[in-house]
Image 1 (spheres, rainbow, N blue to C red):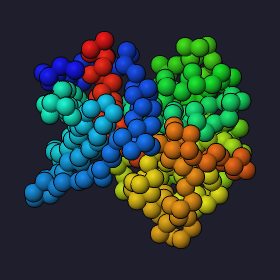
Image 2 (cartoon, rainbow, N blue to C red):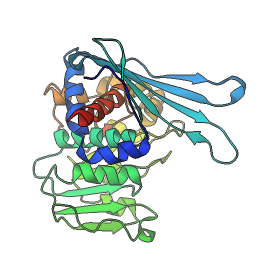
Image 3 (tube, rainbow, N blue to C red):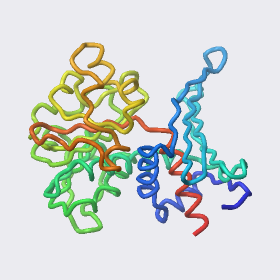
Amino acid sequence: MSAQPRILNASDIDDLVGRIDVRGVLEDMFRSLADGQAVQPPQTVSLFPGNNGDFITYLGVMAGQNVFGAKLSPYIPGEGKALVTAWTLLMSMESGVPLLLCDSMRLTTERTAATSVIAADHLAGEEAGVLTIIGTGAVGLAHLRYAQAIRPWSEIRLCSPSAAGKPDLPKRTEQGTPIVIGTDANAAAAGADVVMLCTSAGKPVIDVTGLKPGVVVTSISTNVPNAHEVDPAALNGLDVYCDYRATTPASAGEMKLAAAAGTWSAEALRGDLPELVAGRAAAPSGDRPVFFRSIGLGLEDVAAALAVLRGLED
């Protein structure tokens, strides 16, 4: 690796995304985390004086790849809409010098989608044929790009309340699978084998209690306080997995609310992504729906930055 840091802005990242292996680097990272060769410190929120915003620090160490780093994401209030940015600094464990400083807004979308798809690939049955994605923004479409090839889907459903007003949504995948566009989330989820929730909702998006046993539901985070895309009361009827058992239950809205209500405990987790990737997690029971919850990790941001650096060097 070069000792000179590279600085990439958002347009540079957009140009690179199509030729970097975010999923592969994330899988290596989760395997390293399972083997004790990666460290995931807690994320921290630092307030600006005078209630003038804050920034979140996401940290991670990947010893096997000899890198460590941090993503800094500030929230800056202003006239009208607040400003939210994110930049990741990647550094060498060998030389101690910066290797890369890059805008990570797009990378956050990419690593979020890749993380969900890694989980779905490990948890869904090989016979899974129908994929539903709830959310037609950048995050939902990223999930579609990563998920379209993990199974020989017979049908893919893309759904959001505004989907009917988006004529540019894809009608087929690169593999030729037809994409059905819809606006009713529960109707789109009915009969699906994998349901990916990709919204910024702060309350339940679908009724998971009506889903068939074995269906895999993935869910992501948003900055709404205690945000949850499924009903917290439903967790005790699901096989629950997460991205990292050491941090997710204390941060994910539905898990916090269910634990506070006494209806669910983190002890009921069947596995996390390090355990799934390493082959050490309990398999889904097959008797009820499967729920995977991601909150996003600093290690995912470090891994995504490493994928960018490798893309530059190839």
